[in-house]
Structure formats: structure tokens, C-alpha cells
Amino acid sequence: MTLETERLILRPWKETDAEECYKYAKDPLVGPIAGWPVHTSVENSRQVIRDVLMVPETYVIVLKETGLPVGSIGLHRNDLAEKDDEAELGYWLGVPYWGRGLVPEAAREMLRHAFEDLNLARIWCGYYDGNEKSKRVQEKLGFRYQWTTEDAPVPQMGETRKGHVNLLTKEEWEKQPKTDISYVIGNSKFNYRVCGIMIHGGRILAMHDERSPYYYLPGGRVKMGETAERAIVREVKEELGITPRTIRPLWLNQGFFTEDVDKLNYHELCIYFLLDVSDTGLLERGEKFTLHERNHTHTFEWLDYERLKDEYFYPVFLKTEIADLPEIFTLRTEYE
Image (cartoon, helix red, strand yellow):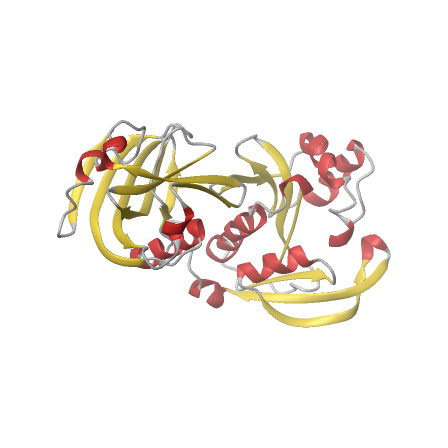
């Protein structure tokens, strides 16, 4: 089975992954803190893949942008997860990819797979004392602390350590906000999004990043179980660090287009909200400013309405309709 997220492919390990596995597993920062020794050679990695990783429900984490393995994640049966409807979640990631949110992204898909596809009831997860990165991942995923063992065995290292155990049940997981409402079928992709329209002095706030040759509006995908109103406030807070006031929704746009970055054919529903940012301090940041989110650099700029007409900008309909905002919530359709 192969699983997929926005940036990752999770697939079974193969012996041919040995060279990429060794590239990261030889780093002393990766294995020992998780309880297993560094790999000593490509052949050692190949043996570990054969003996340990090529088992059911253990997946290599593949970065879509390169097509290469960068880590591992899996659901395991052991002394901690001893019942048929339980498993323990384990993971590791190559050091160059730390801090990009890849493990939480992979783990959320694994939890969905565990609870929905495998119908498991309880997922355990633990970490050894001092592994703060793993601790934070488990907190982000909603795991709850259960107990601490002062002398937990670490068989592969031939020692004992202080270990902490956490748990996430299916009932708790079902109450969490779910993943983005977005999926890919073949060469087509569906998105449910929200965008914020922030206007000041005849200008609109637009943005772009290092991947995009065009300007677009702050916003993002709505999550399962989340209202559009909450989604736009959350997205603007994540991207700009402010909490806007929602004035009203303006348009629900049905968009059909081919994206310049991933080349997929999009069917996108997007609600555009008029936002008030006058009391947030945003206007004091200047005409143009840069912020960082995960591994991306976002450049924000206030664009004059007239300049907007000449820029490479999405959605295209705003180039003409920005100066005449609707008084009522309006349905529209745009084909590229």
C-alpha cells in the first residue's frame, strides 16, 4: 500500500533504498536518541531494511519534490501495543529535513490510516528522556501522557533509559480538526480554500513565495470539520501573525485551471472574505515585507488596483472586480 500527503509519499521499503537510508541513518543525531545504533555502511542499511523495515505497516518517507527517501514511519506491534486493535507509532527523519513539519505531516496520515483503514482503537507512542523533538511531535498530534519508566530497556543499545509513554485513542482522534480538504485523482486535484481580501488606501495585500511566479492572496485550505470563517482567521494568523476581523464573505468562486507549479488540473472552491486588519499592526510593516513559514519565504506587498491589472495575479477576476465589491455573497465561476 502507498499513502500520500501534500509533500510526501509513504510506501513500503525496498532493498534498493539502502544507499539513501545510509545517508541519514549513519548520522549519530538520528538513531541513538531513538534507541537504535548508527548504520555503519550501505550494506548494514540494506540488512536493516531486510530484517526490520520490510515488514507490514512500515513505510519509507519519500519527499515528492525529489522522489528520494528521507526517513521512516510505521505502526508496530510490541509489548506496549499488545492487543489486536493497538499499535505503536515510530518514526525517524534525516537531519537535513528537520524543522520542516514533515514528521507531523507523515504521522497524521499514518494515524488516519490506522484509525480509518485498519480500524485500530489505540495508538501508543513514546520517547526517551531528552528527545524534545519527538516529544513536540507527539504533543502536536494530540497524544496524551500516560506514564514514565525510570529504567526502560533499550535493547539495541544494550542499556536502560528514562522513557515516557503517550497514547491517542480513536475517539480522541475523531474529535480533532482533520486534514486539509484536498485530494488528487490522476492528474487532477480538488481544493476547498479560503482567501482573505485586505484593502488599504486603494491597494490590496498580495503575496508570493520562492515557488510561485505569480501573486496570490493570503489564505489556504479548509480542514475537515472546520468552518470557512475559522479557517480564514487561522490561515491569516499562521501566515501573517495577526488575528483579523472578518467583515463578510464576498464570493464563492468555482475555479478550473492548471497550476504553474505542480502542473495539475485544479477544480477549486474558494470563499473570499473581506477582512479588517486596521487594529492588528499589519499596516505598520510597510509597503513590502517578508515573513517565513516552515521552509518557505513569503513576500507580501500592497498592490495598487491599477498595477494589479498588469501583474501576474490570481484570481484573475479580481483584477476588474476589486474596485466594485459585492454587497451580498455571490457565486461565480472562473475558467483559465
